[in-house]
Image: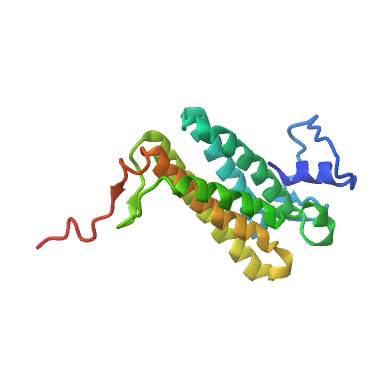
Length: 207
């Protein structure tokens, strides 16, 4: 997921665009900058680039979780979330009016909330915090959850730096709810929470 790819895809203004990647390297970033979807350029370490780069990392972690094995019922959901995350990246990559047609809408978050409610119904109420681990699939989903939380933090920092009008609030809501969903899915992957290891405060403190 690169800004240059977004720019090439969105510059035409056609919402039914087809992405074509004929060349993998362009050399335009050799000076340490990258192009946003609106054609402007920023340093590669800019908070906006960090934001959609972290979203890309999250999608990759989800891809790893799928490839290495999650419950079959999760695969379609996680793949749809990966697709959503490209939409999130596009939203972040094209700021201002130029990207109006790319903005996330409340429906994205609503779909996550329905999935949370569906899967959480089968789980017992927690009496403590959950330590990441248990089944391998659960551990990978917990890893995805923590990357999602980092993506959320980067986006809130970007909104504070550039102003809330420059960052779609639906992006932040979506990432917040996605981390909740990944937590719930991790518990389901741990045999509906039966293999969850709970935090015991002060367990190893010396008497």
